[in-house]
Amino acid sequence: MEKIIQEYKQDEESTYHTWFLNNDERLKAFRSIRKSLTKVIVEIESGTFGNDFKGSSLETVLSAISEQKQVFEGAAHAFYWKPKLRIPDIYENESNKRAFGRFLKVCMEAMNEEQIFSEIRKLNGLNIKGLGPATANILYFLHPTWFPPFNTAIVKGFNVLFSEKKKLGSWDSYLEMREIIIAKNNNHRNQLSKDLGAFAGLLFEIGSNRLVLENNALSVLEIDKEKIHKALNKRHKEVQEDEKEESAHSEMQYYLAKLGQSLGYRVWIARNDHKRAWGNQPLGEWSIKDLKLDNFPEAVLDTVSLIDVLWLDQANNIVSGFEVEKSTSIYSGILRLNDLALSLNTGKNQFYLVAPDHREKEIRAQLLRPSFRNLETMNISYILFKDLRCDCDAMCKFGNDISVLHKICKTV
Image (cartoon, rainbow, N blue to C red; front, side, top):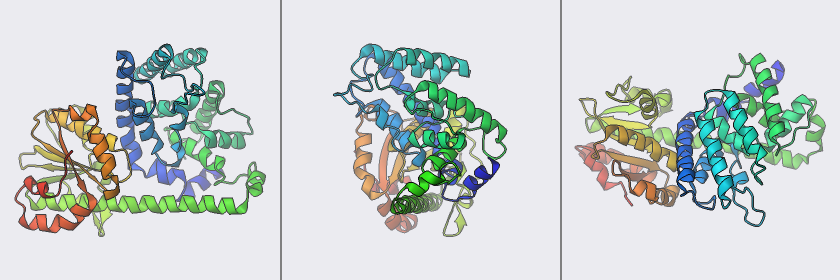
């Protein structure tokens, strides 16, 4: 087992590196997913949830989960409403919908694992058509040390590694898998993590035939070599694309920091990005060392410290916040800015989404959501990469304050 884990960790393109270890968006996702899930529960309880997955608050949750790299690719599929099959039957069946809402609420508020086991048994006992342990992917983002992610590749990897025959759609199989995963993870936690995502990533690598063991060697050999080659090339291209996106993200943070300083503001770079670099210069060198804000609850301050760029005046008051959204959820970025706006509660601050040109339609669609249109506490605009890149130097030269951004920002 130690040798398998070592091989998994040594592969720079494994999910251990590309998703679990070096993906800052994974850490940001926990709070935004929890907050979005609160909205699902409120809508179900108030009777405003609707009768389809598309456009629902649940779609927002699953979209944020699905974008967490390959491990969660396709996580939303199990929740698509298929009216001909009537699965999963939580959209038009009011009783099932309320049961699902109660399940989510108890799981969010649970103080121990037994409370969640009890809710799983209740939910499973209702035999809601099409609603199975794919829900465990939501549980992971609520309690990452209690419940591992769950999908086809993870189940396949588990069966190969432990010579088991667990089934994909069975809660019993999932819970049995969980017990074994936790036991093995505890034995090797010094190599992996208390967070079960690291172990799930290992199973995913085995199940997708990227990590070859004696148990799955024959099945790997039976797969068409061209398919294996295509799969490896696809993963390599995904890693390259991630690196390209990270570079663009750092570039935009650099421009915003440079512009902020030239306008006389103190600049904060997200605390998890201080070691990132642009032009061989660490972004942390453009940032104040510590973010100290008065009257901010600890949980909110923790979220605010992850906002990509903040501009502060000399009295340490936040003037503006910027979220750079290269490929991650626009919705999540808006939530983080909204947390900040609610804490400031002035209605005078200006906030910005900074995104690639091809995401402009998506940004406009999100900002036109009724829930965001009615936010009186937050003035939000967006800036496209091309405009910030092109006009940064000119704004540094001729700008006097934040109003210079009016030349390049857009509103809906």
